[in-house]
Image 1 (spheres, helix red, strand yellow):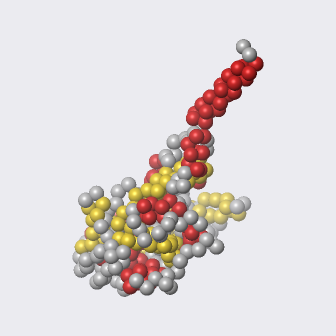
Image 2 (cartoon, one colour):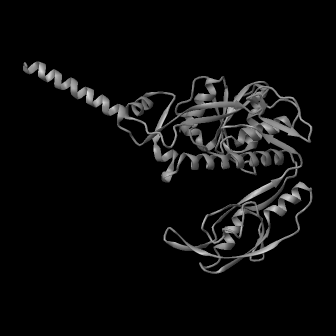
Image 3 (tube, helix red, strand yellow):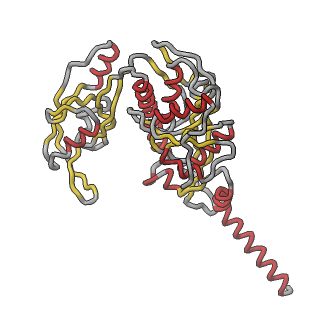
Amino acid sequence: MPRRTATMLASTLMLIALLCAGVFLPVPYAEMSPGPTVNTLGEHDGEPVLRISGHKTYPTDGHLNMTTVRVTGADYRMNLVEAVYGWLAHDNKVVPHETLYPDGKTEEESTQENAEEFSQSQESAKVAALKELGVPVRSWVIVSTVVKGSPSEGKLHAGDVIKAVDGKAVKEPADVAERVTEHKPGEDVVFTIVPAKEQAAAEKENRTATRTEKVTITTTVSEDGGEKRALVGISAGTDHTFPFTVDIKLADVGGPSAGLMFALGIYDKLTPGSLTGGRFVAGTGTIDDDGKVGPIGGIEMKTVGARGKGAEYFLTPADNCASAAKDTPEGLTLVKVDTIDDALDALEDIRSGDTSDLPRCTAS
């Protein structure tokens, strides 16, 4: 075989081998892409996203769209060709696999965690909206989760109301950890609780739960950065009772990032007039009970998805502004918000058509 032909054949075979390696060789990356965007003022799959009963509501128009991100599954392994294509694609983002699934977290674990965060975001959205309207909301500290195999397993249960720790009243979830860590590992902590079943029965009967129990738990040790501290193996959270019913119906969505848009949708339905003035506004951001807006992941994917559906304005958490502004879709105005009040002020400007003073996101 002539040397030139042999060289060309060898080069061709090497190229084929490289292409095959690119197709079959897995790489430790995952992909994010724009997901669905849903109008919180409208319907999804034939059902109202927000349904309020027991209180007067008002007609709305325009859009207050929450936005989402699609991600590849935990068990899916991209090949080299897919990774390169994703890096080159404008609307997709390739990230290290551990960014989406840290510590070897399975897809089921990630889905469960996202569902819990989504549920909590709905509760906080309701509280933030009603507080903004001056509607009283009753709140109390509860056992949110109990760690399997911890000293609290079988003694405390998710939903138990924590009234006091060591006889000291508990007003916020942070109070629980503070009281526990005042102890040395191995010491006893006394919880005064209303059992979850008693609390549920009281809520159903529209009364205040009065039956309490004292539960003694022996702390164990945890090493945090080399420092030993006491723990009991629970996380504390907040539960609420609302004076009327606010249901949020949206399937196949997880995570906390729709909180702001849910809160604005609830506010709009409970107040006369239209927050948007008929304009298409989308956005994202976590929200806490006091209306503080927090940052989220995948902001670039969310702005692309929103603009693709026709959004003109995008309410952007202040801490995400710089990242979002680096590659803003044409025709979309990024509006910086840090609280629900900021969002309401911005919507007033958008509604009036006077947008010259809108706090816009910049890349710097």
